[in-house]
Image (cartoon, rainbow, N blue to C red; front, side, top):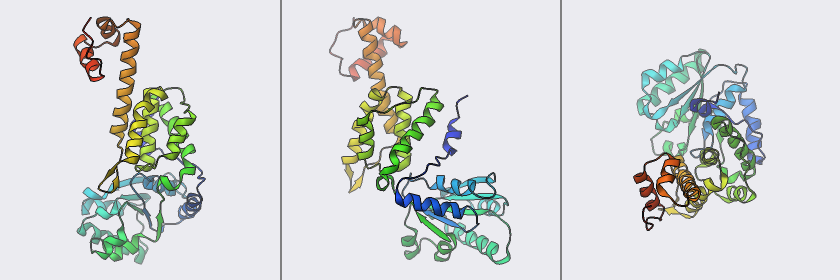
Length: 305
């Protein structure tokens, strides 16, 4: 049975890093797993903050304790306090900088109570893609809460600064989605691997995973990369107000899907010697739908057969 999408969402790639910064961070993560000090993870979106939080828990003396993700943008005070009092639980505060002022105050009180009287409660790990020190200076985030949460603060490097790890990561994601889609393991060409090494990956691990998923889902690297290559290069060269354009999973999947659809249509037309009615039957779509797709692909000048 293939894993569900939810199973894949919580699967954690515990890979030994090649990058020196990540190797040093891994050593710190192993030490953090054996104590309850609050941990603050700072990094760009998609760098793996949630993965590291999960890794800290799994490496602890209670690896099977419940791991709860609290999305701070829509977290209520009552829900937060209820979770904070849960024993045998690790709480990951996702984007802690999005906490409301009231939630910040109550979280500070709860953490202070745990520290002062030894009350047993949940293990707290927080993550943020924002510059919390700047938020503290501007008064958006409480200074005392920042220092309480950052018992240990880990700054996670973006993927463009740890490209040595890309080969192992892409192999992991290809294997993950080969199992999910129940397809044979994909072997990437040298040119595709070089493209992945040269690309800056503004979406970090999340974007790399999306690319691997598209390749496996299509089942043909050349077809998938027909869409992915132009999408990745356009993203790497494009700017939007000085910011690098981001490639979403939907953009990647859509580009790969278009290329796969084009390939299937042209193969069907070749088999039927461009008899559109027979090709439509082979493709199990209506004749009208095939004509419309041909027009989209630039073959609308051919008369219907």
